[in-house]
Image 1: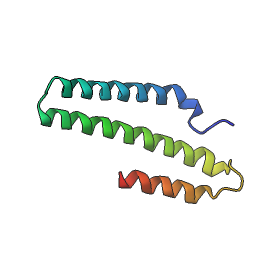
Image 2: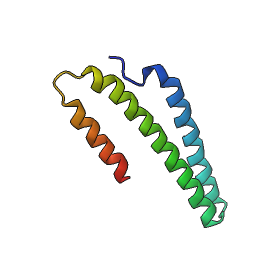
Image 3: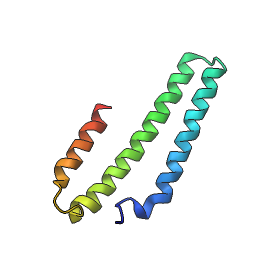
Length: 90
């Protein structure tokens, strides 16, 4: 089954790879005993990047899966709302 993000799959993967690089950079910063505030700044950047990917996936999910009712029996709106709730709490 084709997921809503499929047309943007390479873009999503590219973003996740960049975030992975950011996290590796964070590990190096800690290994190098970098300044705490600099590390926290980079953690915030990585966290925000993940949230941006999440919002994009959620947008694709709503436009594709919810709008077309792809999963059949599932309550797609309730599922999307729960995903939004988890994202907002993070």
